[in-house]
Length: 496
Image 1 (spheres, rainbow, N blue to C red):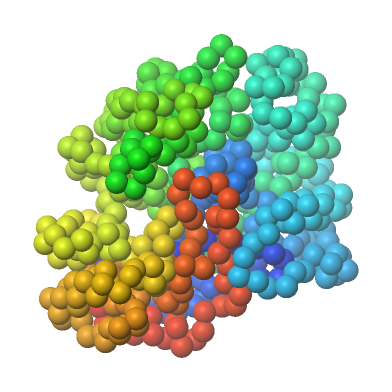
Image 2 (tube, rainbow, N blue to C red):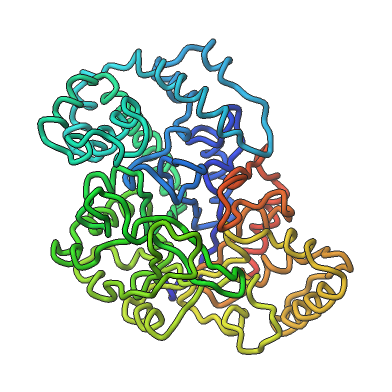
């Protein structure tokens, strides 16, 4: 990657505008892709496409290989004659800057079940899809969850332990329900593949995200409990988190079950190879979230109130990547608490790491996030989905702190010979950040759509460590032609 100079834009599918309560894989996604490509953007970055669970986070899914049914476009289903014009009309919602997940849960699945009622599930193409096995564990898990409720550890022992006879009984007694969940994944994959092929035809690559950990209440853990640190009742013994640091005195308690890496190594990392293979087939490039956990990871006893009592443990390190295909399309999210071990692992793999411009202005000349210090084999962001927007961050500063911050930004602009007028109240800062990222030596510079549009805190995507109010940012309309023209000019000026 370091021999290339590309520009990217980060905008998750859910954040796209549209008439159905959430961004979908329909016409607005195609319009956005065309505008990106026409502007000279080469990479469209999105968050995980998986079906979300509690908290609506794309980093907590019921299955790593699933696609989010909310993203299935109703109008494309209507073209298949699976929905009527009247049903489309009833499904339309007022375009707002947020997402009402509660209302979406109540209405969208009901709509999708209407589409399924008209679907020919005896067709050869659908039966061939089921035979691939891609959505088998997902369909079984969601069927059991729909019929029995709770988490999988609460189910009767035969189902909880996946007794073959009990699984076959589940598949046959609730066959229509079982087929419904396969149908959702079949339709999602058809729509996603068509969109991806369209983007690729425009010279636009898709960069996706793969979380390091999976959710406990998931088909992944249910189907492969031996690969996680669970007790005899299949409940977690250890869960993932982050130790206390500058941002939190008690650390972060994520709650995901941690891997039994010795068990993974005994099977030659087959499960992980399948997971990475699925991601590399879904996207053109894949960013491994929390990459540092492959060197060493932080685990906390299950049931702890916070992360203070956790300990560091060794991950699989370089052995994890032996024989992994598609290594040249992997990016490492190497932010957070780093040490020599993870730096060595990053160097051994050769993966591009990440740098974030919002982290650069602490006054240290050796700050690794400053444009002059980042190097080439890097993906450079103005900010990420876990940060405030540039404008939101600036607006949060008191007058004295902002004055110091502005002076540091101005000094960097002068060093990089970038002309942007900075105002007394944050004017010009978002544009300055966009220009600094694009002008840098980074192989790939990625601009969140919020920073390209100069949006404030109201457009923030996620507050790490909180479970409510996240993942709701949404555009009410496509960015203007003027916005894309300005981006095109900057991309040309900075030779990306």
